[in-house]
Length: 517
Image (cartoon, rainbow, N blue to C red; front, side, top):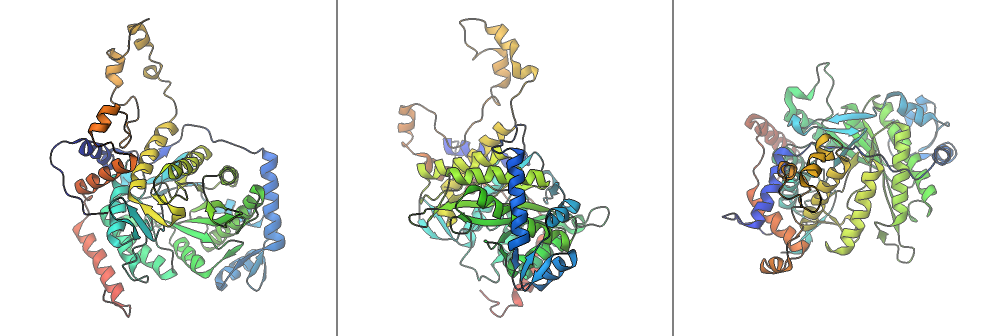
C-alpha cells in the first residue's frame, strides 16, 4: 500500500478512522457469546463419529515422522509403535487429553486489559495467516514485505472487532527465511499490545519465540506459583492425511514444555486430503487432532491445547480449493460439537474465499464461513480478516471490510437486551399511537449505542454518495485504511524491554552465516 499522507481537517474518512481507532483503547478484549451453539447432529451421530475415529487410531494409526521422541512417549503410554506408525488402543488419546488438558485458558497480553480467554463461551477474532502475497487498490497483487507485515499488525491493533494480533499475517519475503521470524515477532511486540502467535517453522524458531516473550513479559512471565503464564498460542498443522512431521512436532514440543498453547489443526482439502464425504472427513479430523493433542499432553500434562480444523473442499472438475460451500459448513458444525464433547477449546472459521478481489464472491464466501463459525461456537477464529485467493493473498481492503463484519458479529453474539431499558416500555408509553420515536427521552438516552455503526458501509442518499465520489466498498475501505495507518500511534513499551528485544535479535541474527541483510 502506498505511504499514506496525514490528512488535515475533519473529513468523513478521518471521522470513520477516528471511530475505528477508538477501538484500540475501548474495544472488549474478546467476545462472550450469549447465544446458543447451533447443532446439526444428534448425540448418537456424534458418538458414531467418535467410534469411527477410534477405529482409525486403532487399526490404521497415525505416522509421526522423523521425531523419535514422539514414538517413545506413545510407546511408554501404551500405544503400539511400528516404525513411525503409531496405533492407539481404543479411547487412549481421549483419556490422555481429558486427564490434563484445560477446557479453557487465558492467553496473556503485555497489556493485561487485552488478555483473552480461549474456550467456553469466549470467541477471539484473529487476522488471516500465512499469505505470501498482498493486494491493495494502489499497487495490485505483489509479494509481501516486512512493511506490509507491520501495517497489518497496526491495523489489527486499531480494529475493535479483532482481539488478537495474529501470527504470520503475511510472509515478509524480502527477509531471509531463517531470520524473518525475529522481525515478525518484534512487530507484534512493538506495534501492538494485543496477544500474538509464535513461530512454528522450526523448533529453534519456537525457542526464539519463547525467549523473546520472556524478555517482553519480564517478571510477569511467571505466575505466583512460578509456573510460566501462557503468553503465546501457536498453529501446529497435521500433515494430512494421518501424518505429523518433525517440524510441527518439534515446535509443539518446545511450546508445550514452556506451557504455551498449541492449536492442533488438521489441514484438510476434502476430496484430496480426506474422503469426499462430510462424516468421513470429520472422522479423519478427529483422529488426527486427538493424536496431536495427546502428544502435547504427554510432553507436559496440562499444557493448553486447542482442537483445530481447517477444512475446505476441492473442485472435482479442476482440483482447485473451494470455500464457503455447504459441505465445509457441516464439517465445522460437527467438529465444534466434538470439541465440546471432548472438553477442549476449538479453532476454525475465518473469512475464507477463493476470490481474487474483495468483490461479491469474496464477501459471500467469507460471510458463509464467518457466520457459521460464530454460530458453531468457535473459540479461536483464525483468518477472520484479510484473506483472499484461497489464502495466497492478504488484502488491505478485505482486511478492513472483514474487521467491520467481526464487529457486527460481536454485537450479535452478545445476545438480546431484556433489561428494563431493552424492553423500552417507557418509550412506548411516551410516544403512543401515530407518533415517532426520534425525539423521545428513551431514544435520546440510547441513540449513540442503539445500533452498530459500520465504519465502511455507505447508507446515505444516492445524491450524497455520488457527490462524495461514488465509491464502492473497496474504495471506501482503501481510504479508511490509509487514514488509520496515518493516524496510528504505537502503544507504549518500556524502553529497557525494547532495547533488550533488539539486542536479542541482533545477537541471534549474528549467529547465522548470512548475518547481514
